[in-house]
Length: 168
Image (cartoon, rainbow, N blue to C red; front, side, top):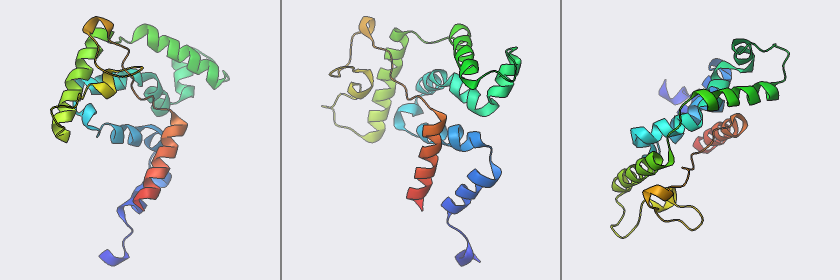
């Protein structure tokens, strides 16, 4: 009977608490919602976002004990020390895009997002992404580091519960 069913948000809340692993609400659902933003419809922006958050995504989905084990650390090692070693390992081993490439990616993604949002021709869609301290696009040689959101478990979990509350 459709009248006796819970709303969709109720089923999602049940899924988050009863079925899905913690990483769903502390990492994967917030990442999925973030990927819906028009800027992240550009594949290179998605890759930049995933690279920025790679260490945290693996940490959330695999867990510190398994990471410690794979890195040859004792299971009794403190999570903070495992995180520090893990982050250092990722920074040494996983490639990053240079500022010039990121500037081009951000510029292309901003224009694509602006077209989707049907902004006027007088607005500069790169201002929010490429600018720092006052905004505005910069020449390729002076591209700032792209400010990507950092997905942190506690903040993402709070986001999930807040999102569900708003849906209800």
